Length: 178
Image (cartoon, rainbow, N blue to C red):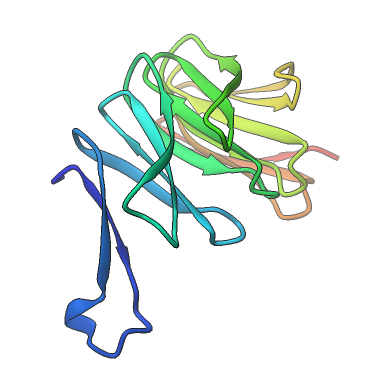
């Protein structure tokens, strides 16, 4: 990676000039995602940080989410008021849009993935400690979902009745929460 996430405008008729901004990091960029309202972008990098940008003025970082190790992923809450980041430091962290740290969700190995439930009331994390975990918004563990190898991804169904997890144990599991 060249250390940039790039913002593109495909409404521009000249497709050769549709790159409207480079969002710089000091090292490889792992992830870039728009907020639900499309006003913000979160990027994460292996330089121990995630950054928040505005789409209207992408030349300026408006918040930097500093971590101790590589930040593999960043994702917005459904209401766009919070960001969850995952890190090689064995945690997922919750931040507000001002870049203030709220709380952390701990595993015993690298956290590969984290996402909010569709209603924004829960967060699920997937870790190399062979578990996915569901947390409430107070940072309390609600449920642990075991695998026999690294859990790579986890996600809620749109109605929040199911969880799907994918693991290095060569399985994808569907968990019934009802």
